[in-house]
Image (cartoon, rainbow, N blue to C red; front, side):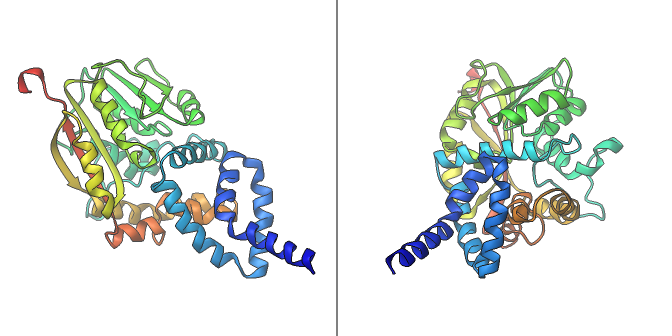
Length: 333
């Protein structure tokens, strides 16, 4: 009798703690996919998958968007995992994109080989040009924190012509992917922590941060580092999605240094338009190239129509905001 009770209790503990241990194992050990598939099949058979998935979604939101050190570690492992799962060079950008309310949503010219990721490139263009107010970055040193797969920074170098471009990312696998995929004399990629950016004091003219800051454990430490590496007169362009009730604390962190806010834009509608245009392509990649068990997580990550992140932006529970800050010159202080 007691053995039966203990056995059932053990099974229940395993099932209801799975939102904790499954993501950790899943994103740190790719070979666990086989075991995860077995667990998924058992939960479906027992009719418990819906309950576990619902609780898992809540825990996922806290773990990846609210926690401190766990969030930083898990995003790092998640992006390492994506590099293992998607080694293809055809996927070079990782953001929700930017579109305008026209028949096509187009805002820039692109070469044919770049068209598939058009809307993600458009977000980079929008940000790196200071909301389309700066024609180019001629002669400037650009550093992107959270460069991901490097496509956005490569776009900036190709079309906006800075003197040099450096991408920093916390995922070593992504850095290696970038080094192999984007080559050239004026572009480089290095491993680094957003809270300890590997750059000299006052050495950078433009710091770019696109849809990355939600991965950081300490946003204030990141902003302090940006202020440290920017030259007087340097520009900081940052954009990301946030829960509406986190916006005040986020903007307080942005205002915690000498950098001055030049402009803020709410681009939620533009991002939603981008996802409307791009959801079929994103869904196709997920359905054709990933195990079924991962589809809910990857659909949420990719922001396709109907995903949690999409509906949260649609309802304004989350907003997508963009900021342009400038570090004052000595004469302006």
